[in-house]
Length: 247
Image (cartoon, rainbow, N blue to C red; front, side, top):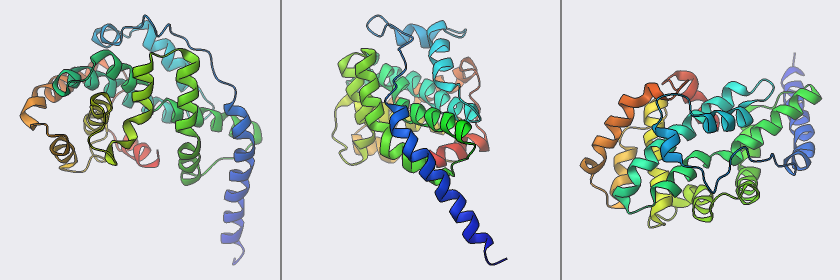
């Protein structure tokens, strides 16, 4: 009986080692871009009431992985709703709507590609990584992978830089308007699709830090919430909240 905890810990460590060794090499293999980013119009793609073909193509690339497709789909939902909010919030913050929307769409790209690679290795090796180890590997590789992919895909420079820098807004509230837009848009997205994870007052505090009056964005929040049905698969569920905590 006393050996069982040690056996469980050993299994976790073995899985972490097996995946860590293979992950660096796997992440060197970047997928080809399914879109021409120089002509991609996120505003048109997000405005459509039907599933936009370009977004559907990108989602199939990013969300297909052994045993982790549901997890990736939830991250994709976050990205789409963040992009929709970013497009609408941008004019209020003096940001560029197109760059902000593209950055919102790609803001979890590094994490998604890392998780997709982890899933492929898990399938090959017959192991399963625990959530804390997965999060640690996303933290270790996600930003670097995103930086390489957006450059390889030819994502417009302003959008590419914003997609990588939004995370640092908590450290530097006076960051560029595009990054502030994506940061705030993501909070709006989480409020909509995973309200259990969005602590009361966190959005209002973020807007106060940015010097934004809440009334200026209340109509945007309400409108996107009404259009929620246009984002297939987006639901406010306990599963979504749990996946946000583990990401």
